[in-house]
Image (cartoon, rainbow, N blue to C red):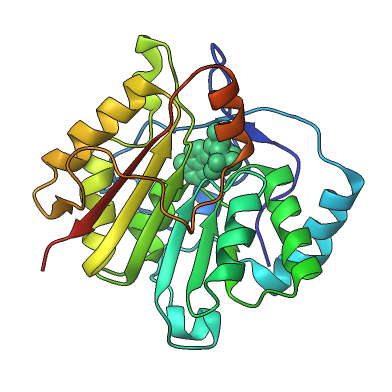
Length: 259
Ligand SMILES: C[S@@+](CC[C@H](N)C(=O)[O-])C[C@H]1O[C@@H](n2cnc3c(N)ncnc32)[C@H](O)[C@@H]1O
């Protein structure tokens, strides 16, 4: 079902340049996006080979057809995708899926669409779905920018989670950061009125950028003055634990779409 070949592993890597990827829409065989009308964007990740466990590989081979949807340049019917009509939350860059599983378990009334490019992360979340028996998670293994642009209809989402996105700390790499004005404008257009965008980061400089970008999007409204307290539904991730150990702070931001 998936077009992914499970060979190239994407990951954020300082100093390395992105190479061609089998699931990249730069490859016309893998995308229906029209390159003459769709401006290219700078990717927030780079592809490189990295370790995948036999269990993750086996999960990719066996469970992708059950829980993952291939990238397509046509909007998803979310009711059909999840087999029910329920609020849908998009999670961008779920990593190894710990947070996705934890939140989906505590919010059984919501649907969770997880988007990730990293093979071992997708394999790990597939294993978690099988082990937990959760029915409210679906996965798309593809660049989230293109998934939001092409697969999600306007006003179709109840919420968006972006937890600890790659910080790209060097100034010359800031252009790779996911939270940028054009992408947030696009994301906000996919939110139903009252829907939320929840970001978290342990990089102060990125937190400041997130605040400026989210505040600058006219269709969004901050739920707090500045940063938000961590809501109970978001568990502490390993990235967060690591950041706290390094003496970094953690900043949550929760904005809602105006009516
Ligand atoms: C630093 S990790 C954080 C993982 C997880 N959210 C957590 O808190 O543990 C960022 C993740 O975002 C993924 N990612 C980066 N850009 C992406 C994109 N454009 N589309 C989908 N996933 C992306 C990376 O592959 C990586 O797994």
